[in-house]
Image (cartoon, rainbow, N blue to C red):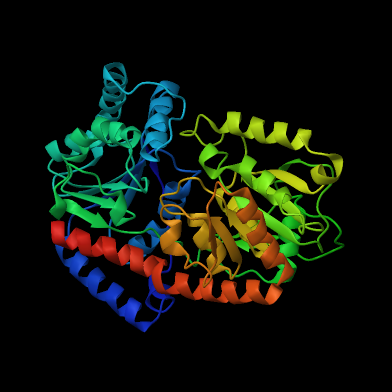
Amino acid sequence: MHTVTIHARAAASLRTIAGTDAGGRYEQRLAAAREVLQGRSVWHVNSTSAGGGVAELLRSCLGYLVDDGIDTRWMVIDGDPEFFTITKRIHNRLHGVLGDGGPLGGPERRHNVDVTRSNAIDIRRSVRAGDIVVVHDPQPLGLVPVLRSLGATVIWTCHIGADTPSPLVRSAWDFLVPDARAAQAITFTRAAYAWDGLEADRVHVLPPCIDHGSPKNVAIDPERTFAILRAAGLISGLGDCGDATFARSDGTQGRVSHRAQMTQEAPPPSDVPVVVQVSRWDALKDPLGVIRGFFDEPSITGSHLMLAGPMPGTVVDDPEAATVLAEVHELWESLPAPHRGRVHIANLPTDDAEENATIVNALQRHADVVVQKSLAEGFGLTVTEAMWKGRAVVAGRVGGIRDQIEDGVSGILVDPRDLTAFGNAIGSLLADPSLASGLGAAAEHRVRERYLAPQYLGAYLQLFAELA
């Protein structure tokens, strides 16, 4: 295992960003948690420090708790390729998808135990009796009984799930539930995701959030947006457009200096409408369906499509990314020349996490429409990010996205397997900027009311106080 440094973030804005009532509730929960956490540490354990929504959530939000006086720490487990192949298989099954079709049986359980035993050596050196440990998702779940034996209070958080449990979903539950039952509390992002076989009084619903003050979500003016996108090689057609700098979380200044790895015929002009999807290279995000649906709508003639994701091989716990990206490239190459010229595949630089976040921020702000055509989704952080920026969003009517977006009010929901409906929704927004603007304004308000750090962190602080 290794420890990730958490930089303190100025927490004063948590009292105001979501309104007076939310700020007051956060302050009350913080005071109660401080009282019971004296002399205790709060640990978060997951499987990667970069790439994916959980790592991003922890990186951006934990610093507020540090600034507010909560001794907060973050550890990441180590694992070999076989371990992450198994956990990706579990991830897919929890979404109701077969994935690689491999088994979940005795050999897989024994390998997980071996990896857990190796990580437990480090965890025993760090965690003390009385500490609170939040274990995120299936990868480190095997550590829960180990942590309980050390006298820690353990919360297991599952960020993924399926709308309707199938035998495939239940096979993943059966594999995981012995370790999950060892936790004093279990949180899900939606009530519908709670498993059978868990004690109801241990189950809590805590939807995630975005960090309003992070490089990915902080306000950027149009001039700097263009500068950042040009510096990253994502758009063309601009002269000297300003300085591609950004404020880092630690207060220092950064500059966008790494360029995206592009698959395209030419960069999109800066003045054409752009539809954007930002996601991992994951079959559940359906990048192939995004391309096909985009061209299924004949009215989308002058617009361009950009699919943006991380550089290949940079997300340790996602072994299927290279295969999915290769399929996207294959489809792009098969498109007729006029269509191919309007599709751009962007592998965003990931050497600097906050530079990457800044590029995503600028790309979402530049987009005329943001899409997230997920076939399954626990909670769509990229959906919330785009909503916070006042973008019109078209997303799959699945999982947590159904909670995030009120269809026709703060975005448009579609059956993600209906390519015609998906294309029609995009076309309607591109054809009616006032409709897109109205949905975007309502989207920003909904995020402010429900999905910012004061609500999320406050809910965890309340749970800490109840369990400690």
